[in-house]
Length: 226
Ligand code: SF4
Ligand code: SF4
Image (cartoon, rainbow, N blue to C red; front, side):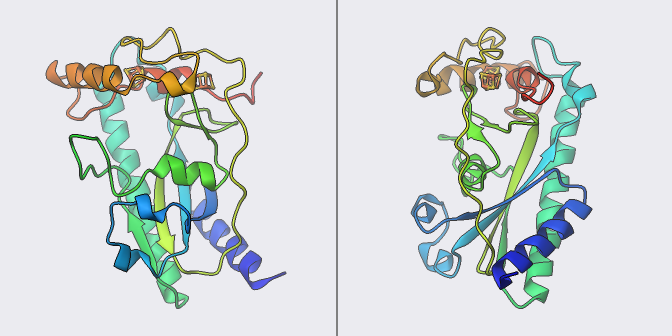
């Protein structure tokens, strides 16, 4: 086994043993100029490790036409799990003699554009974990959109996964559930502003303390049971 494959397999085991549901590695040389981090500090990193944690079906099934307080709590708990796991994994990588920078799972640094340090879903797609679906989320074949992501940048020599080539196909399960009609048959037509206005409305109603919804996440269950 090559050194890169060896490191990949042992790190994957380390991550899955923590309870993560998904692990993938992407080369980032072509995309890191898009990240909202200093290009000087990005120089040393050529890979991103993407970790995913599946959401609980029991929490999502209770969502109907608006997010619930339990979903809000679950959302925060899963972000805590992701950030903690990314920290533990980055620490492991450092102990092995390499550099690793965990990127917060859900820290907005540009409120106007609703952007964090980097787009985890884009990194996840490059790492082979799924495709960007009609709901504008990363969609995994097995879990649908029912998971969340975190990313670790590293210089560790790791085998890279192939970018995902799947797509939503003929599925349109999320189209009619969106209260803002933001989801369209063509993924490129997704209406970001309509979605964001709806999230602001949920927030104004005092149901949740963050811009979250969960309705199209619930609708997107993956394809394994079909
Ligand atoms: S998050 Fe809510 S408002 Fe936004 S696209 Fe999904 S269902 Fe529609
Ligand atoms: S519910 Fe279907 S159409 Fe919507 S994002 Fe998921 S796979 Fe794509």
